[in-house]
Length: 206
Image 1 (tube, one colour):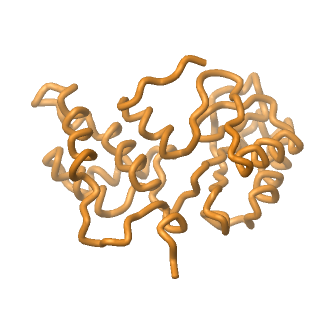
Image 2: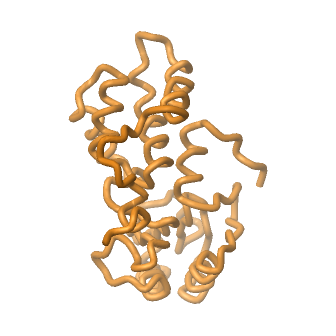
């Protein structure tokens, strides 16, 4: 049996829509930010909203966003696949991004990436740890080269991360703790971070 949490949080009822009830109300709040002639600009926050519900962006969500914006599913998918912060595959409660671009690589990012897999109990190529808690993602660049090697937990930055520090971060998450990032607020889960990025929650002060 595949549990919902092992499938990126997707609901077992295939006939249930992503954007309905309170979620549809949230979508309308997002759309209201934009003039009628520019509502397709809401595509990114709507993708974050879908991700906050399902833990990923599935085919149903892509199609429903297209309907809301009067554009094609392909146009929505083109945006969702362009940006690495959107997940279209089963995803853990926590997403750990490790930058392996040049500056980070030169300062030991590959060892940090390996430590993330080891601590999460994952092998390379897996999308989700067996307990459903973790997704480990190799990021092209996190834009903080001065603090290499850099990593993120649920989009929150952690600087000069060593393999030992990565193991500590994952151990804390496994224990139900939220590690304090080096800048900005901490989010308790990938879904919570996605909802904040949709602009639907006040971001707590760091």
